[in-house]
Length: 369
Image 1 (spheres, rainbow, N blue to C red):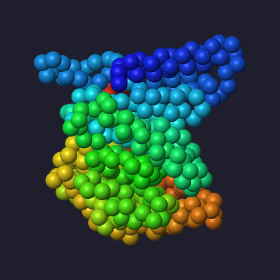
Image 2: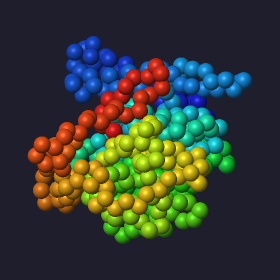
Image 3: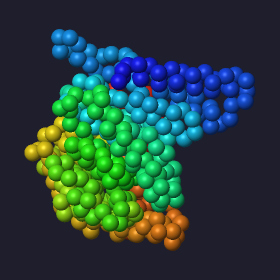
């Protein structure tokens, strides 16, 4: 497979989409969605700065176009982006995002992919795989339909990597939120990665309650559940993988590194730079398995850490929403904190921004789930 030809073809596809959308703008016929998509396509076409090694082994900054394995600028939009040197990498990670994603939020997922790549270190490439129609809200995420359709597609994609990667390269499949269900369905459809990481999982299936239901030795299942992750607590799609007896439960916070590590709570912070959560993901990707830190905290302990009874109320309500019993929206962190603290409780500061792209790239828009 000629990777460079594939990258050029998808770049030209985006150029064609940009020109078509710009023509609609010039003609005065573009609607709001087309105006937004034009901005998105321009962002995807903008060169980015990356750190590369020259022939002498020196780190240099290189400007290049983004490399897309595939891209579809129509409808909700899909994309698979390659970060790093896919054909020469010793370690590959395939990141599968969850609900609330589209082409408009893709660059935010690419930021997460870059965070994983740099945490894993030299010799790592990451593929950000949004080649499915991500559920756009809780009602859609209640259904497994998107995951059932995406699972076989992801399994086929992993097989196609054998044509371009080094024979000895190790592949880690990383899923977040609804993306863990997509990963689970890929595994149930014959995908055979070397390692699997699930973060913030709502479960895979009601009949899947141990790692051996998904993977066979020597593949291992690594799971993260942060304090206050209401999605994991609801177990919307099945038993929480963080409770599987034969899974490796990784720590998201390191109590021995409070002065240097970033604290991780709730559902969307697993990929924060300088967090124990991201460090553990990087250790799995590069095969540094002996340095993984573990935890065995229970939901009761975690909800106490993450602002107590208010969060337990939230997770219970979210579970009822998933079951179709009531309709609520997720309160803000400040609201949940006030419930937890009671009258006169202190305000929880807003969460810091997620990891940024390398120098020269734009801040992304959209959901990070």
